[in-house]
Image (cartoon, rainbow, N blue to C red; front, side, top):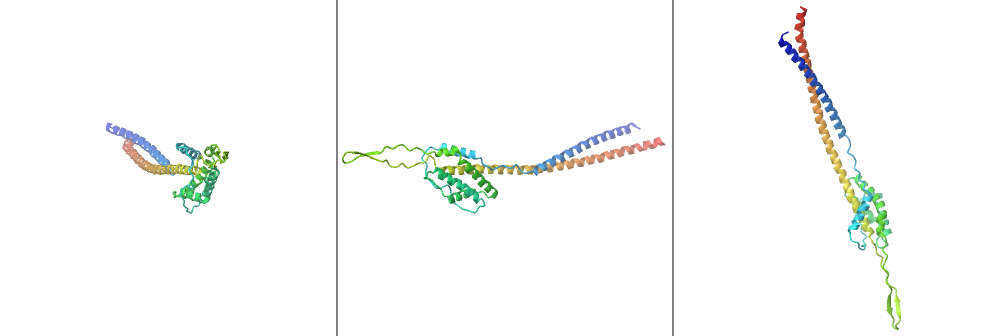
Amino acid sequence: MTVLKRVEELYLDVLRFIIIAAASILLIAAVGFGVMAGKNYSQSSQAEKPVSADVNPTEVTDSVLASKLEKKPSGATTSNRVGEDGSTADPNEKTYEQIAKIIVAFVSQNGQGIESLQLAPVVDVIRRKASPYDDPTVVKEFADGLAVVMEKTLADPKILKLFEPLAPAPVAPAATVSNDGEVMEQQAAPVTPSLRESPIEIVNSTLNTYARLFNAKIKEREQARAAAIAEEVQNKATATTQLMIAGSTFGAFLFLVFISIVVKIERNLRAMPLAQKVES
């Protein structure tokens, strides 16, 4: 065998080794990209984590009390209006009535006869509060959550303490002098009872605070859903790219295997004349 042929055989051996090593790396890479693509597709099929729209009653109570502290103490103003009236059909009517009964009972208990509310207008107000939401599921969440918040907040001892009656200042009876010079006492005019706080104002503050916190929860959930959708789209795009890379890598692996077979055939063909010479 000449030196040239030996060099060719050596090159073929080296080439075959390189091809086998490269083919092995490509096969491993193809499997790896395929696994990552499958993982991304499985992640994209998962639903986003649900974000609860429940409002903590304690948070509502603290917010209402904080708003009272920011205001200067003053006598309560009497008002029978909780909000705007309005009526539309709603499947959550029983929940609205439950909330309205809690509010009416609260105002009646703490209004000392000065403030009072009727059930029907309060139901209309609560229905109007829930009307901005188009999704019936969200409306039900709003109504159910408001029922819980109203029941707990309006029964909270910290709220009820606001309605402890103020003791009227003692008034001395007025003294007059009769025509005959005798001093006569007259009873003082009756003192008009007053409230430290307006229960209707507390109800309004609780309603507005709950609506604000509920809207924040809904926005947070919508943002989480939008982020989940964006992540799902990104995962699918990444998975598609990884599948394409895996397919291309596997195709390159098959090509190198074919080259390896060609090299093997070439080596065998080169060995055949040498074997024939040895036999002869």
